[in-house]
Amino acid sequence: MTTLAPTLQAFFTDRLARQRQASPHTIAAYRDALKLLLAFASQRTGTAPSHLEITDLDAPLIGVFLDHLETARGNGVRTRNARLAAVHALFRFAALQHPEHAAIIQRVLAIPPKRFDRRLVTYLTEPEATALLAAPETTTWTGRRDHALLVLAIQTGLRISEITALKCADIRPGKGAHVSCHGKGRKQRITPLTSTTIAIINAWLTERCGLPTDPLFPSRHGTAMSRDALERRLAKHTTTAARTVSTLAEKKISPHVLRHTAAMRLLAAGVDSTVIALWLGHESVATTQIYIHADLALKEQALARTAPLDAAPSRYRPTDRIMTFLDSL
Image 1 (cartoon, one colour):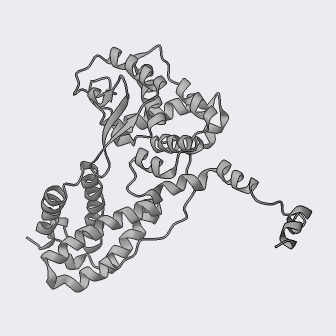
Image 2 (cartoon, one colour):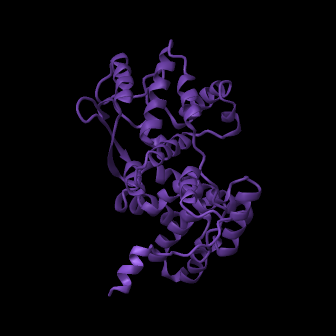
Image 3 (cartoon, helix red, strand yellow):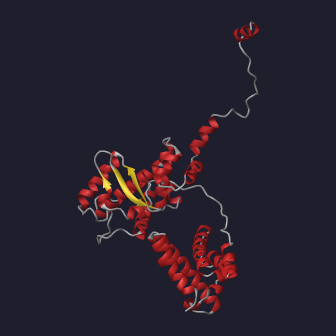
């Protein structure tokens, strides 16, 4: 057996699963990235993946692989950088296990992420959000489930993984109503719910009639909704809502857009960015600055406080009373 195969296995079982206790989403993302790399390296070298050596995965091959992701697979720069991060994580672990390959490993670790243009975040305006919430057919079971899900997503800004993982017991009604979730970075987070949202969720819980450990938003088979299923339902309701508000047809609506919408609504209400960061479960307040960049109204308020460009420069002139006072000193 080669040195790469046991190193790769130990990376997942020992480093990620045992030492770092990485989430299933992180492990799956790293797995997919390294599967693509091994398949690409196998095709390039003519060696089966289980017989590849660390020396086969040198910096030139990794560079060609990254180009392949963008050109042949059509991945964006963000996806390309995420794949590179997985490769870097593996090679940092390999550096501890195989110091004899330090030179090759160091050159791979020196490959930088690619810079990219940062676009303004996409979010729903109030008319668009209203149209989307009205899109589900509430005369059906799935329509009432989707309506409750969309209301909760837009008000709380939960991630798609957090929404699909919610259990019935995670909704805490009554005084101080809130939803509790286990979010990114293994952080437990609670988010308050408005009276309107809790009324809709309570009605859904009554109809759902599930055990505390059952999924809050189940599929027709009673299991938790998958990410793909949620995205398909959102796309369906977006198409329906676009017949009422045409601007929805011009936007690419994803579950993360609903998260952006929650953040922009908080910002428009005058909530401080540090509070929004806590609300969304951001690791750093700097992450929340993207919403300030996207808020045109906030910039217009700042512009209104400045002097007009065509205003003639003036100079402060004290009143006669002040001059008299100063002359008396």
